Length: 92
Image (cartoon, rainbow, N blue to C red; front, side, top):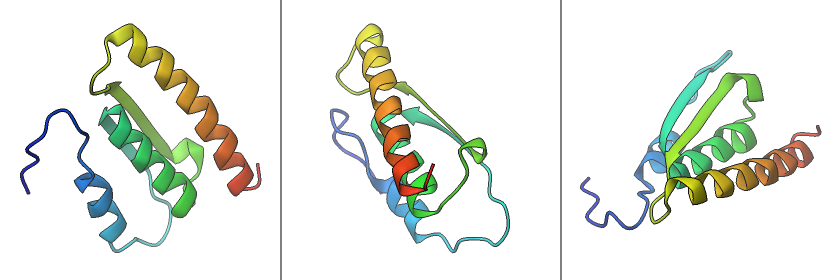
């Protein structure tokens, strides 16, 4: 699938991971890319799939529409909010 609009994040990666037949046992991941997509994947894996924080390395390297300094501020704030949300969902 071609993503025609470089000003919007693609949702295709999230759809692909959602559709995967989930393996049994421990799953470890490494995800890097556009921050909006990486955040969605992290929340999917940690929240819906129940992966432990230690098994999900996810790092957003840029965000569509933001310069580096702005991106880093937003990235930190979102990471803190996501961790608080996930600890409520996963019981700590």
